[in-house]
Each structure stands twice: as C-alpha cells, then as structure tokens.
Length: 204
Ligand SMILES: [Ca+2]
Image (cartoon, rainbow, N blue to C red; front, side, top):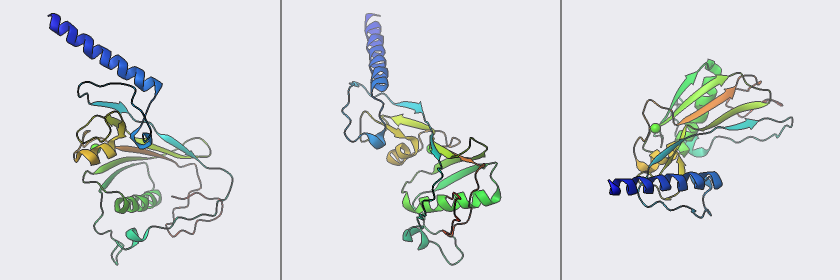
C-alpha cells in the first residue's frame, strides 16, 4: 500500500510539473528550436491536447503577387490533368462547399500532396462557412501529440499529422480529421487556378 501511495504521489507530481511547464512556456514542435526544457519527465508519458486554429484576415491592399504552382506539381500531372505519384495522400471531407470552391481548394490540396511527404494519410475537414468580415478563414491541427514513438524532441508537442508521419502510423482514429480548415464564404473569392486573380479579390 505504501508503495502504491508513493507511486501515485510521484505521478501526481509529474502531472503538476507538466501542467506548470505548459502554462509557463507552451511550446510547439515547429517553434521549439531554441527551447530549453524546464520539466523533467522520468517515465514515458504519451499525451494528446486539443488543437487550435489560426485566423487569416484580408486587408484593403492589393499585393499584386502570385505564387505559381511549383514545377514538381505541374510535372506530375498527365495530359488529362490527373496527378501522378503524389508523395502524401490527402483525404478531404468537404462540408457545405460549392462545386467551384471545392475544385479550387482541391487544386491547392493536390499541390500539397506533391510537396509534403508522409506514408500516413492526412485527413482534412474543410468547412465552407459564413464568418466575420475580412476573415478569409482559419485552419490548424485538430490535436497535438507529445512523446509518441519516434518523436525527436522529448518535450515538444507535434501537430497530429506531423506526429503520424514520424510515427509511420495513425495516432488518432482514422475516422477523425488531422487538420480542420474553415473558409469564409463571405468573400468575393476568385476560384480560378490560372493565377489571373482580378484586383481586390482573394484567391487560394
Ligand atoms: Ca490521422
């Protein structure tokens, strides 16, 4: 009994130390290059925390910029436009999208599938929603994973799709999205994929 009591205390302290570490210095794997761990994890402890979305706003300026599709993407399409040998499989669940909007977003997803490398399918929940003015949309991972098999950093949280790539397996349920992306339908979107976006209109 005494042993059990000590064990529980030890675990409780680990959880408390961990929570304090998170509050004082939240860290994500993508930005943890110079991060000095301030907590000690004595035993393996796999964790998952909820993800958060980043909002993207438009402003009134015309940037007159265009980022064309990369050559690696263009070279991987056959004569009928079909994508050959993607390096990652993106599975998108579209909710309330118009056919035009879906086609435009799928074009961007197809580009990603030639730039991102992962053996584990990346699942996206994409929502076509009505939101506040000037908001283009928001997106982010559905969860972050800590201390999974293969994690290079012992005290970092990884976005779920990156964690799954490193672990070479699904870490969440295959029925669950890895990324959630909302697009604000209250914008005068340009859905063309020819790079000829008219003045004052946002595009993907
Ligand atoms: Ca997954």
